[in-house]
Amino acid sequence: MRLVDEIIEMAADGKRPIADALRKCLILAFELKNNRLKEWAEKELNGYGRDDVIPRYRCVALHSKGNFSGPAGSWIPQRPLPLGILEEKHRKYLTSKFVQPIATYDAGSTDEKHNAMIPWPPDLIVHYQTRFIPGYALSQAWQEVPAAVMVALCEEVRNRLLRFALEIREELGQVDDKPSDLPVRQVESAVVNYIYGGTNVIAGTASDFTQLGTVVVGKGNFSSLADALKRLDVPQGEVDALKEAVDADQKRFGTQTKEWVLNIGAKLGSAGMKIGTEASSELVKGWLHQYFS
Image (tube, rainbow, N blue to C red; front, side):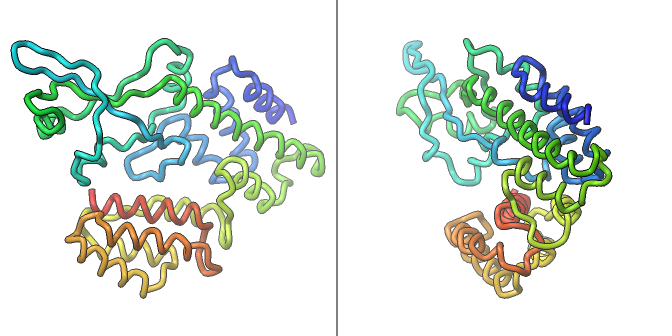
């Protein structure tokens, strides 16, 4: 099929903007009638929203640096900042999630001489102004984004799209190049394995994931959190255990809650769950962040 061949050519050519290949992928998604592929292509093109589950390849651990001013006009520039000093409730402001359209990073990834910066919120700088170096005040703080991070992000998207298109082209030979004739489960399997990185579907279809991904949990509203978990088929006993953990942590994302998250991860792949273990874990973490934010 010409469209698939064009996607392969554009994805394989590292000089072509990845957004161009994604737009053709979106057209292919409509041809294949696959909602999960549509959603992925649209979010990569337009960016991810506050309530979306962010793919792991868009989440990166970054280091922070700061400039300090001191007595008699002294100055300490670009000092690495140990984030262990930060209170847990403030660390969320420094969660490095790259949610902008892929074109943003594709354009910036060609400049390998300069690292991009993500400034700290001003209120956070003021709050920790005297916490790092005795006698010195933190005047500026930022996270450094090495150019290699943006290159890797774009290459991850490019490689996933390429591998998926190659798989679809191979399957199209069995149906005389008619995308609409490809079995739904066959297409879904290719999307899951090559676009979403092997998050296996246990039961239901892509619409299960899409619908669950749109669930919004209210801040501090445990009832809405419990309802979301039940839609994922989390047993009532586990929901009750989470309530006890949250109360024990004084309604913070503390030790007990983190332990519950680790324990529930091993149980999310049971036959009763609607989607696979990795996707389920990401949804649960996203809902908890909404609850505590």
